Amino acid sequence: MATTTEPTDGGPGVLDDAREALRVERRRAGDEREAFRAFRSRVASVSAEPVRTDGGAGPATGGGGPLGVAAPGSAASPASGPPAGSGLVAVRDAYQETVMSVPHYEREYDDTYERSVAEEFSPELAYALTRGSRFHEECKRSLLDATETAIEERERFVETVRSEIESVERAASRLAPIRSEVASTEDEAFAESGFGTLDAYRARIEVLVDDCDRIAARRQRELASHERGLALDDDVDLPTYLYQDLAPTYPVLATVGAVGDRLSEVKRRIERAMAGNA
Image (cartoon, one colour):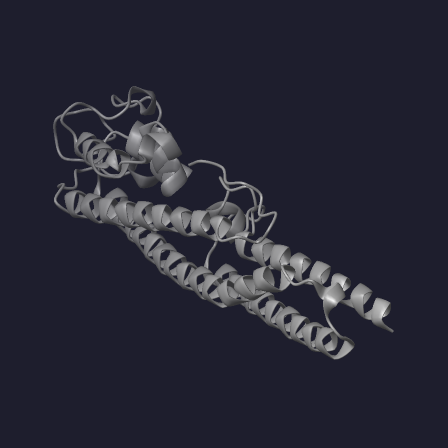
């Protein structure tokens, strides 16, 4: 994604870039949600296998490590990976053909299978899936539960992005007439205006400043609401994650601030003209 220009004048370009970034994120999150749903269906169809600890051909005797990882010294050593034709191979193939095949996977993640399942599920489950000897019932249940959690996380994220799109659209809509009025007021020759006209201009500018303050305050409340609904890394807030490829990390607040700076400059010009008329 291309990096946008700094919002030096509060123009619409930054918010346009923000909306495009959100559309991309919504599409990617939706693709991942559907990929995990497909993966869940394929895992559900994989038959669970007995846990083998004796290396023989007879029935399983039970035991083994967590989630069915073979005990050290057994015929199927954890270091050897899943045996060919096992349920674990079917799970791996299903994961690679669904989750790891979303269009943006290489660009955004580019992880190996083992690292990906560790990140998405847990290191313990990843170890069972990549170093285990059998895809047994406990491992299958754990994997289906973890996959359901991944689906729910994507659903929450899609909803948050949808809400964020509405927030940006609302701010852009409210800022557009303010920006237009600022542009027309900036062109006024205040030195030629009478004191009463200048005072009216100043009062109107103050109203527009208050409008910008309200837009910014609402935006802050909406961001706080989004944060409560998501579990992102402690070091990354939602705007930083969503707008990491944009020049301003907080595009709405940056745009409001730029419009506010223009209003302040117009107000200073008006007050200088008023002082000259005194």
